[in-house]
Amino acid sequence: MNCVELTYELPDGVHYRVCTYQPESGPGDKLPVVMLHGFAGSSDSFSHIAPGLNRTVVAVDLLGHGGSTPAADPARYHVERQLDDLTHLLNGIHQAGQGYHLMGYSMGGRLAMRLALRKPAGLKSLAIESSSPGITLKSEREQRRKRDHQLAARIRSNMHTFFAGWNRLPLFQSPDDAPAEVRKHFEELQLKNTPAALAANLEGFGAGNLNPVHQELTALSIPFTAITGSLDAAYTDLWAALRPAISAMQHIVIAGAGHRVHLDKPDAYIQQLNQFLTNAEPSL
Image (cartoon, rainbow, N blue to C red; front, top):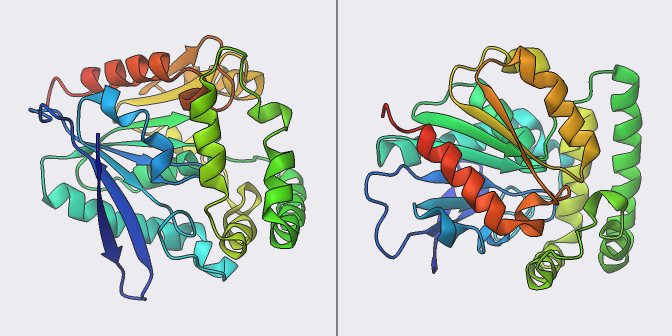
């Protein structure tokens, strides 16, 4: 499945690269799904997922990633500014069709949840993978901000050394049967990013800079799923605890996957995401 690249220019000169994948047989009456990658990824992070979804996939290079503007000013990554950018982009997608689904992984999930809470026109469902609504304690948010500034300094110093250590963290370990070529491709994508942009992203949009949205999610009325890997105990336990309070939500746990579910168990991930998207469309 080939990517068709488009560039969205914003009034302040920032541009976003968007990669659209079209199924060979055509999407039929299926709505497109907009996919937002995680930290240091890009739209290419989903190149192995798109063919199995059998619908139009609109994968976005988030600010400072892939082919989008490598802004070096942390203030440009403020959550409200990125949400304004993506709202502008999504409005264009909605005007071209009946609506769309939204999926975000990790960092992209933080944006996707907050986008959904803006209730943009045309949004039909929300899926997130291995993402958190936020850090509830102010003291813990401050600790996270300090840690992200330290990580940003390490990226500026030597990005290759940083990711060599980053990918060995327990959170990002894959099971032995995960497809090695998929993980290798993702790690190659990380190094195609610009160090100054990744560092600024951590300083301006790290999790410590975001207010939690646990309570706001309870008011969501569109279909909503949180996907986690069974080996990622922290995120699986988090969403299992939140599930009773969010009536629109289902929690999908994929056996044998860690934090990077779409890399560890791509076939199971595609199956579960397809089922969710299909179930979200009957009334459309």
